[in-house]
Structures are given as structure tokens and as C-alpha cells.
Image 1: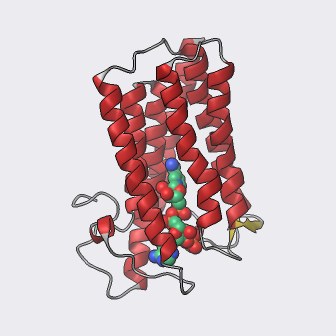
Image 2 (image 1 turned 180 degrees about the vertical axis):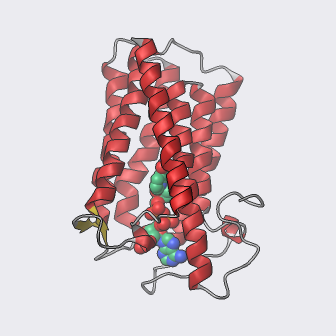
Image 3 (image 1 turned 120 degrees about the vertical axis):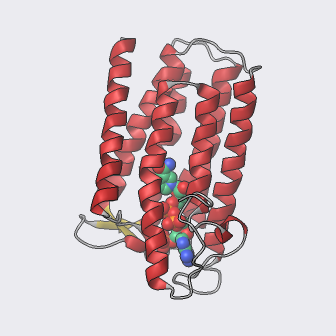
Length: 249
Ligand code: NDP
């Protein structure tokens, strides 16, 4: 059973890698947000799409972790808690706060994210609830991973806040400034990648590695797309700014 689980996960990671290579080579801009366009299926309300496409992540992983034969222990409770807190923000708070009134996204994008979140939730929840051996939370990797997770979450949420506040007085797009925006175009993605690296350091599991890699595979191409878009759109865009990893990329 465990070998099948690991096999599925390796196939899943391979699929993510192929997606990443395809997005980088084709330079396709995933059509939501600023890159949204027709031709990718029916257009649906942006805020509701965010809610429904991320909702499986909020429930599937915690549900499997709780109903599985493994008894909940401080280590599994920690994993479920930080996952749940992240997705509570992404599923409920983030869609309520974004200023995207009247905006739409193609249903194909919402569906692909929906299915990604089902699979990702299944892998991580099944691991915690059915496979994982009890671990102590009093290990260095747990402390270091937790600090990194919280650090990433602070960067992610504060950067999303900066972007949301750009629409306080007017619609449209502006050049974001301040904090990590002085170094990269997409610090919110940088923070998200750091968060899941932290989760991986705590969990030290194949499903957590898969999620961290998928986050990288999704967000690096999108950050490169955003960065190009900023440079095309704003002639005075700061030239020293990188796309997503300060001083590197
Ligand atoms: P974006 O940075 O594209 O947009 C975030 C919000 O800010 C949107 O409402 C957007 O509006 C608005 N915005 C962005 N830039 C500007 C600007 N220059 N001026 C004015 N408003 C702006 O992020 P995403 O929508 O792609 O992602 C949102 C969150 O979800 C992020 O925190 C990200 O990390 C996370 N995410 C995680 C993924 C994963 O694989 N783990 C995958 C995708 C996202 P508009 O929508 O109109 O462009």
C-alpha cells in the first residue's frame, strides 16, 4: 500500500515537473488576474472561483488526518493546524478582501486548481492520518521549520496586503513599492514558497516535498510572467528588481 502511495506521489511530482517545463518553455501566462482572457472556457466570478478552487485544500487534508486510524498527537495536530490556518486565509479571508469586483476567470483555471487541491489534500491528509509514524514535536527540524513557515506566511500575507491596498482609491494596476517589493515583483509568491519549505522541514515527508515542489512549479513561471508584464506595462519599472527571489531570479 505504502509503495503504491509513493509511486502515485512520484508520478504526481513528475507531472508537476512537466507542467513547470511546459509553462517555462511555452511562456503561456496562466489566464487569471492580470493575464485573464477569453478562450479558456466559461468566465466565472473571480472571488467565488478563489473560494471554490481552494476549498478542497481547507477540508480534505484535515478531514483525512482526523478520520484516519492514526491517533492525533501534538506533531500531527501541528501539521494540520498550520495547514488549516493558511487555507482559512486563502479560502475565506483573501477572497473577501481582494478588490476585484466584476472580474472573472476562466472556469478551466478554477477547475485545474480545484483538482490540484483535491489531490494535494488527499496525499498530505492520507499520509498524516493513515501512514505517518508518531513524531515528537521537540525536534530541531520542527522548531526551524515552524519559524520558516511563520516567516513565509508573514511575507505572503503582508505582500498580498500591499497589493490589495493599491486599489484603495482607484481600479487598475500600479507599481507596488516598499518592503520586499523593493527587491522582487512577487514577494507574495516568495513568501508562499518559503511557507511550504517550512512545512516540508517540519513534516520531512514525500507528500510535503511534493507540495513544496508544486508550489515552486506553479509560482516561479507565474512570477516570471508578472515580472515581464510589469516591465512591458510600466516604462519606469525599477530595473534592479528581480521576479521572485531577491538578488537571484
Ligand atoms: P497576484 O499577485 O497576481 O494578485 C494578488 C491580488 O492583488 C489580486 O487581487 C490582484 O488583482 C492584486 N494585484 C496584484 N498586483 C497588483 C498591482 N500591481 N496593482 C493593483 N493590484 C494588484 O497573486 P495571485 O492572484 O496569483 O495569487 C494570490 C495568492 O494566492 C498569493 O498569495 C499566492 O501566493 C497564492 N497562490 C498560491 C499558489 C500555490 O501554488 N501554492 C498558486 C497561486 C496562488 P487581479 O486579480 O485583478 O490581478
